[in-house]
Figure (tube, rainbow over the protein chains, first blue to last red):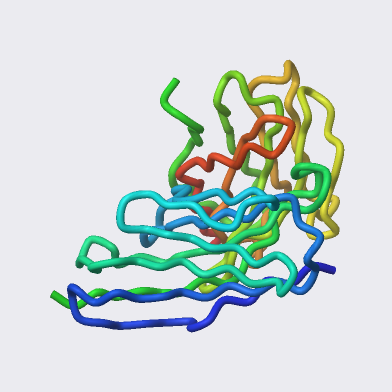
Length: 114
Length: 113
């Protein structure tokens, strides 16, 4: 059974710092990996999708990497801002393109101090 | 098309009552998923549809839960005889076959009192 772990569980940093969120998964046979953002009491917003054949994806100040063989992904946030405060969730899709649904980690709760 | 829509946003119900939630996916997406999320946890897979066919159900989906997608468009999730343990955020997502990524709705927050 696939398990996804996110470290750290919570992180509080001053505005302007660069930071790294970690995600690991136990079964390297994945179809893709997706990072989401969730604001309190809200749904999930997709940030980045990395296909299993890709190594990284970038969107603005966000960069996500994927090392499928070691079962790891990182989300790098550059020049953090108070508006980045949210919970960040990592999720993997099983082989077959999602037939069995995503497996999520518990998330990293991020606070950016003004 | 503005994304995945869920209704209602919030629902408070008394224990033992039945509740029904609705999800309208992105129109061209043929897969639709239901997830449940409790406080401090990541979302957990409940069930998914490809077009109108329900192809997979998690063991989390007890007999009190039923989901439908009658015409392969919107979906409903019904919980019968609600229990306090059903209190959670219920999230709907849609995708295209082929793993192009998932789009989630804003969720329905259920509170059973």
